[in-house]
Image 1 (spheres, rainbow, N blue to C red):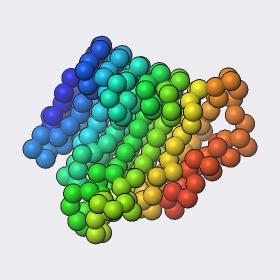
Image 2 (cartoon, helix red, strand yellow; image 1 turned 135 degrees about the vertical axis):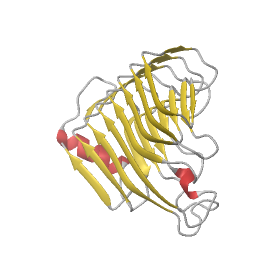
Image 3 (cartoon, helix red, strand yellow; image 1 turned 90 degrees about the vertical axis):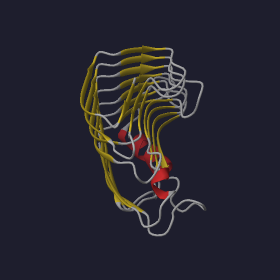
Image 4 (tube, rainbow, N blue to C red; image 1 turned 30 degrees about the vertical axis):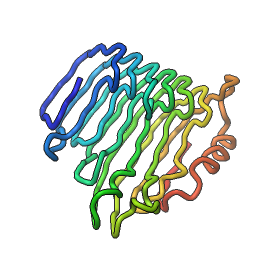
Length: 231
């Protein structure tokens, strides 16, 4: 299912099985982002890339999706929120109650590198919320957050800044190599909130508050000046 620059779209109970690429893609058309899009109770299995990809949108809500076994082509995420360039927008993106199961890389991936790539002096403002995410056994990360382009040669063109908010509320990550990877979230103008996470390791043990703090210090580190963590 492709939504290219469309607006006021409501998709209910889609079933997507065995696609060559993305199961559902929300993208721009001639530079215009998709807007006011709701996707409710999607079930997506064995997508050949990502279950759901959002490259450019305003007021996009994905609720109660179940996405499993996305594989074959990178990024192999259940849900991938990732612009293709500096003309894209990611505002009012809400992912509510998603369940992601055994995807090839991550349950939910947010990658902002392309905001730093193709034009100078770009200012982007983002707002992304992921609420009540449950991941079960996606191969590498329950969630992966990155502005990896910032500071890399060929990216980070003069003056490019991404500001705004990333919120991850009440996630449960089960049986991943790394529950949350955000060590390349290097943009100081982004405020990242992580609230009430639950992590269950591959042995089935639920991590204590002390273990969680140690895990997140290691895998988040000095990523942005504005990190708010609450357990």
